Length: 221
Image (cartoon, rainbow, N blue to C red; front, side):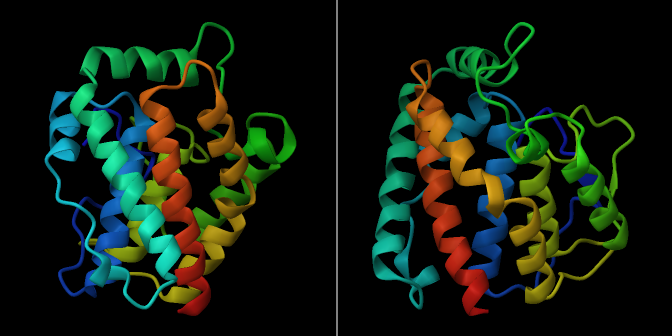
């Protein structure tokens, strides 16, 4: 979905034996990985615009209000994708997350957890990835604790790959709790309230709603 491949990888293939809910979770993580890796191109914007409304039965055993919030955020993201051009989306991504010398909103876990890049959270994450049999692609442009890379890692843990089976619920829960949950809400709030956020305000809204449901899902499993 993106020209920037996330760093952690076993392979691009996913298991065909997933429960529908887990397949949906993996798909949403893949989408977020693409959206946070770089500005969405025409193909991804078109795919989101024409994607179906979120079907409630996928999450029927979860909190109804959170399901409705996610469905509404998905509809707003679809509408924003219909109105956005690839060029404008790319410029917004650069302005927000790259910048000149300093980005407006940092997408790295270490920044949010310690205030510094390439700090202890990254070392801890790398140890976790090694224990899981995951490693950074040699040509990857993103550091492992970038949000895109973390979303791609969650996708791999949920869906598995040609080189490995899906991780169990406990492993997924531990990775999410250690490396995503402690900082993602603050990051999404920063995006959502930033003056130059337009398209990515909708991306952040969708991310927040998905993470809220994911948090509940992992607790219940």
